[in-house]
Image 1 (cartoon, one colour):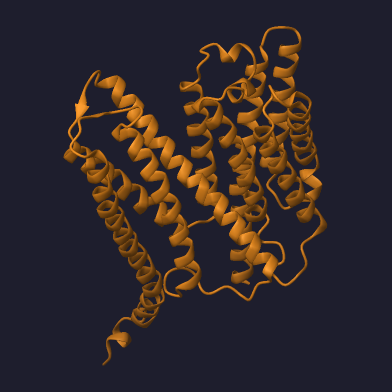
Image 2 (image 1 turned 90 degrees about the horizontal axis):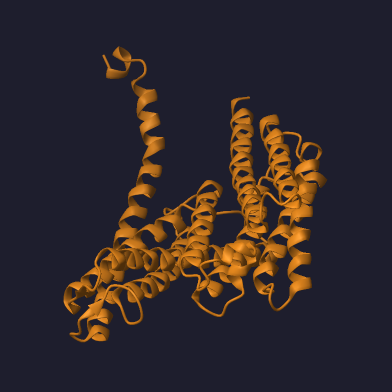
Amino acid sequence: MRASDTHPDADGDAGLLAAERPALLRASSVESVALGVGTLAFVLVGVVALIVFGGRHLSISGAGSIGEFAAVAGGIVALLAYAGGRLAAWRIPWFGSAPARARSRMDVAVEVFDTVAIAVAHAIVVLLLWAVLGFVLARSFQDAFVFSFPGSLLVATAAAVSAYYVFLSAAKMNPLLLSTVLAVFLVLGALTSMITASDPHWWKQNLSALGMTDDISGMTFNLTVIVAGVLVTAIARYATASSGTDGRAPARGELRVRTALIVIGVLLACVGLFPVNEFLLVHNTVATGMVIVFCALVIGLRWLLPALPRAFVVLGWAFLAVIALVAVLFAIGDYNLTAVELVAAVLIFSWIIVFLRITTATTADAAARSLSR
């Protein structure tokens, strides 16, 4: 008597295990390559650090410090690691998902553009993360210094950790992960700009006052806004990526939602490209236009994408109500302009992030229903 006769589910279990094996192979392969990338970053950055530090005593933060070196090296490593991870996911069959269907040159160009934008976002996140950590540690260890050899080990470790996690992010990039990257990027960029602001009372003017200076604070704020705008244009494609996957042409509502998100992203990037102190009219026009397009998108979403959950539609209307409320409070003098801009920015980006996650979940549910039929 065969074992399968005694255990009727044995053949089924074996089939399931066989089906899961390729996925397990891909996961272990990705982890192995990521470890290799991290090791390579550790060795290369460690050797360069030993040469650059040259036996000196190093400060923790500031010009010529290990914090500055770790931030710059981590940013460069993150940029290269993300590019390598995406290239591996595209070219190596066992590395990621099944090879995609043939695409037009326009599709490839858009994919490359989105990849560059997300890679830059990862690099900036890593750079700001190590810079802020160095700033905090320098305040925790006043007047302390670090010897060159342990300092080289520290920055090499920071580079290795950066390369490892960014490579994994690139290899496994999906809409849910992209929403997390956008959230972390915005928080780190805004906090870094606020912490390094030369004017401690910048908040008495408006949020855009952070981008008026020529110091690190102004550069960080404007760069964060520009890259965030480019990321939103990438999200526009990710959030509506299901369009046409079942053989049909994208619906008119889907195309309008994608267009609206792209317009929001472009206008947001223009907010950073045109600082308020140099281009007052243009800056205010693009900022106002971004809010108007967002309001129109939220109001029309029920008709543009009727498949979305009603709870998300209600959430959008609630966000609009809060923005209107703080605008009224500003008009009567209870809130200043910075408070209104902060509330509006947090709610708009929160809506975009949740929208990306909701559309991903809705697409997954639709695919599961079609398979069960």
